Length: 360
Ligand SMILES: Cc1ncc(COP(=O)(O)O)c(C=O)c1O
Image 1 (cartoon, rainbow, N blue to C red):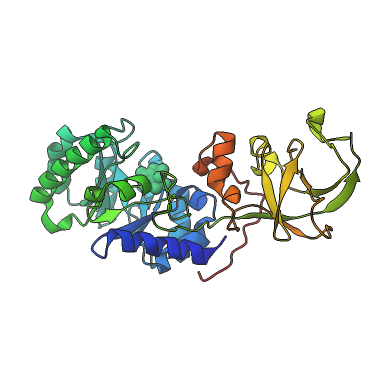
Image 2: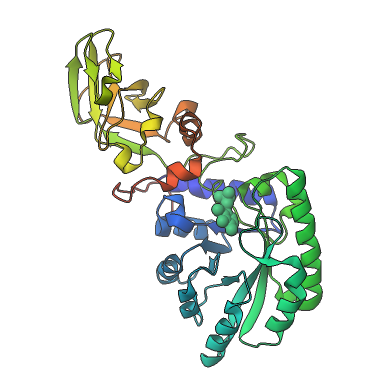
């Protein structure tokens, strides 16, 4: 994991949104597979105002590891979130059921809990309908254990008429909430990476990017020059000759049409490097692109090293990430496999050691 690239991506996003908008860095799901604590540490140092997670366990880990940072739990699906009351973690409330419990717990502890209210503007997944906002705010402002500091929404896409309509609903909701809460409303956020890039009107007080921090620009462009953070690298453990006419691997899916030198790499679909990445796939070895040959196995894959001057065990193969070559970007793997970069990054097995380099 290239932590310099992670910090540079955060800084590129910050520059894009301008100094009056803060960054809420989404580090849920083990920072999209990149490793929660090292990634969150880098992003907090890069100036993220809040670190957003989706699990109570992740909030607890960050609280301990980064006591100076402020954590936001993005949903209220786990009833154990009540145990976070009394910590500094900001909670998100998406429906009325939990608010009385949060209040009671906060009052019992002699404190108040910072809450972000999530408004459903058209994702139809989580959140209060905009029509219930005033009633919810009336409840919250009359219960001293609840401190509504944030208002947020989430969009399923960007650049569409429906997305613009959602953003208009949200702006209206923000106006109402501001008139009731005044300056106590410090965090207003709607924009994930795609919305951030395509709807400047959605920046509000904070933006809430995930995938762009990890180097993927939604829509496939390179406006911000984001750099890949994750690379998958492994050593070649064996080099073997395979004669013309012989097949390689399961299903005999590939047959050599000339004599080959084949390198075996101990990475397979069990580690998250899926079979669908194989056909048309390449790796970087000794500065050259070489093809993946045969089916990817559970724990192994094969590379055709015939064109290399001196292929030998111990050489490193880069399967994606660290390279200028576009065919080694996660976006290229996603295109070949019909997956999205989110699935590929979060799908990298916990068994694979995460190594970090660059300034944290
Ligand atoms: C509520 C919420 N906000 C922000 C994000 C970040 O989205 P993206 O990775 O597309 O920037 C996510 C990710 O799924 C999310 O669930």
